[in-house]
Image 1: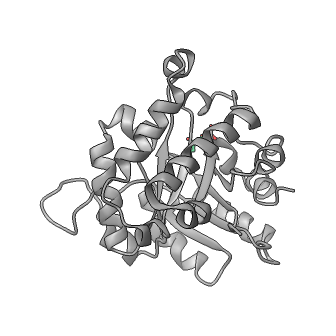
Image 2: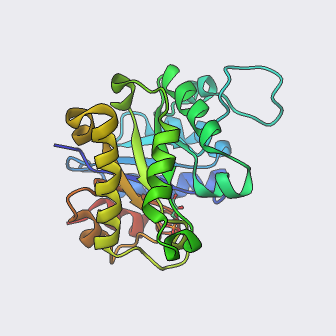
Length: 251
Ligand code: 13P
């Protein structure tokens, strides 16, 4: 049984004060716990420390949106996995398409970051997804499967137990244009089949696959009803307590 994992990727939104306010709203809505769901918020770096105190001993885990794959050193502007652990992060998003498109991330840098995150006890959420032209030309599945294979290069079956994979079609991010539940399910099944091939069925069946891209209160139930969708990585709809709580409480 895979525990559903609902994560909010806040991207470059929320000052410290706004972040505290949002988390207080979420905690109020989850005062009776999260009923067998895992809930994660990934605020900007600046809000991690103040939120970690608020989130201690609550049903909400803390995650970061990126990290640099070194422990420390002369890497101006970068944040290390050790620093993320130190401020209470349990998760870290790796290889989001915005990082790939705007900050030059590649499958190779994603692979390095996954290894560094795992080496320091963080659970990575590895993002994969195709662009609109890739989907329109029938390349969606080979592109995504290729990202999965390259990103996971050299990872052991044991390390895979700490990993989450998020399928986020680029054309669905921030557009209101969600993949249909059937299309998302088909890609998740292809990812899981690749994991079976790489690691065997026990590891593949235990690994959680999130869908991301215009997840909203009005489409979460249908998405979560798909057999290979085990959670969501939510952008815009995670920025308001009401909508994220409705997503967490999917039926
Ligand atoms: P939206 O939910 O705003 O489409 O963003 C999805 C996303 O990129 C989450 O990582």
